[in-house]
Image: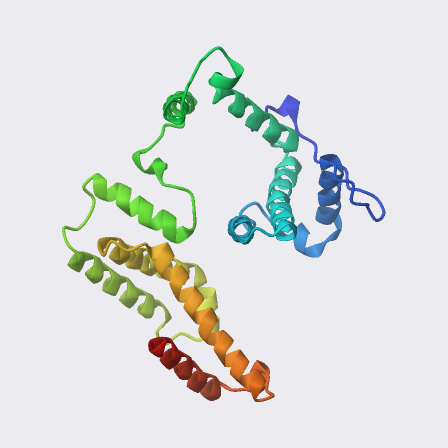
Length: 288
């Protein structure tokens, strides 16, 4: 956080209806206006935006894979929105603003590329990677000197919750914190599921809502334990979940198509009819 004498001031909101100019300062002023006048934007926090930032990064990845320029521009804009939104919130708190973020990035890029900006000569990718790792180690040492030492599990890769869970378990396993076989992982999963059931068993909707924080923790424990089972089976929990998501979307698409062929909408159907079509979709999968 900046010293008090360097207090950051948030951008001034744009007045009237703004035009699309392609200028970063105008975008910052537009974001400030949304924070001032939009009920949804006004209630957001840095923590509430985390899931949106992750979602937008995934959608950008899908757009790049599809190689559609319009979609890529749109998704890059959504990712940029998350950066701008976070900067606006931190500027409102007097901590830092967009220029500080850009300056920090510029300094890091120059620092991590001495072979480009200084006299160092690195002839191939391997040498660049080795030097990059050396510089990152120096940065970690500087963080430690500021009272923020790097812990053994700090090397967990950024990513979705499933990806982080599997990686942190993998790192802990390398340090000896793990079961010898898969039976321990299954027992832990069953234990966590029973604890989750106990949290909701016999509770009314109002009671569940009042106790939602504890229930969320128990659900998280179940998910973490299930990821451990996947790791023990040498399976990628993220890939397995994505396979399930794609399968669900495919089957539900079949239901929608069959209802449409019968002149019906999903909203006009009921669970019994949809479940019957779901089973038909499953049979089609097995026969294909």
